[in-house]
Length: 557
Image (cartoon, rainbow, N blue to C red; front, side):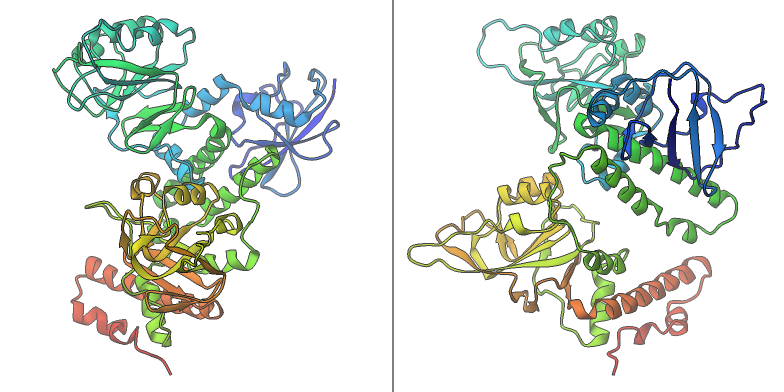
């Protein structure tokens, strides 16, 4: 029998419980603030454990400052640590039922936000409820289907998977098939319901929707049809990774949440940290809603820095709990983080105006974001430049370079290929590896190829165009982290890049602070003009004159 002191930080006030209180709080009253750092007689450093089996009630004592609380479990607690506390931690954090309970308390919006913050893919577009079905959470049982070839008899594509289900936490995730052809109907819905399957998510269409409604079987997908898949569709694989919505990979046993807003998949390897951050985001958004209801202005409430703090705290917690992390070991310096932070919330037009006002040539001519037809990239990419200069290949040819191993988290790779459009210097392998390494994006004075992966994965690419011809044996790396030219702009290593749907601007590192200050002034003035036009009915000329719009970008000095 031991005592363990548990500390956690919370934004919610929890009243202390007196010794003589008849009604003791139980563990159900603990707000979902996890992971909990535990300092105990067996732990020489913080570890993160979600559950401790206990049969006692607990006393809650306020300690340190008001935002910190301590939990002391006494007397009846029986607990034995294994030899490796970290191994025990990983084992406990993999408690499936616990994760599903926590996931069920959230919605797809919050989980999607957490994935975004952690740069993880999982949110989808178009996989919506096909009737007014309830929210579902569970573990993925994946099936890929495809067109039938030949005339030989084949089993139903989902019958083996449904028959093999032996737990009550499964959600069928179906990918592939034929456009406009159903692979799901009422008979198979009844079979899945009888096996205790929680629901089905189809990256495609289904039919016999009334049959699913009748047995209250949840279905999520793209649309409904009457066209049968019988003799048209067969199973390609089961229990293997599948790709849905053109870019999200779902593996067997990944976590699934689907509700009225759509469907989100969470990689099983990241479920603990995603839930931790999602719960904190949910809590913070609740506070923001209450602040608006209490009379605070929406401008003040929405200008919230707490989300970035939550991200940093959560990622730090995950690193402490998983010392064998495979993340990029090259981290952003403190100064890099400071300079990037100064530009947070600004876009390239505001920065461009500030550069004009200060007489700095920083607008990269002809460099545009990679995008699919009709799409809009709302992300602003900001980071220090990791510069690479390519030159024509020598005889024998040199290497196109493995410089990505040296790029730090948050850097923007800036490649000078002398505006060549006859060969590329960037393809899908570079995109994939850069995303894994936490690179913020890539700017190329030239062209790229293998663009589908970058578009699917959402990796920011800014180039002069796209072309399929390889640069191997045509160009080679001439210099790394030296001066380069991008769209007629000179870029030094570690200058700061700001890129978005409007284009790319470069800020000399020594001028970032004054550029950021002026850009923010310009941005705020324009926001005030929009507000005056919207809320006060002022004329355009009046508002511009009042806020000095016509001189905001005028060159100074």
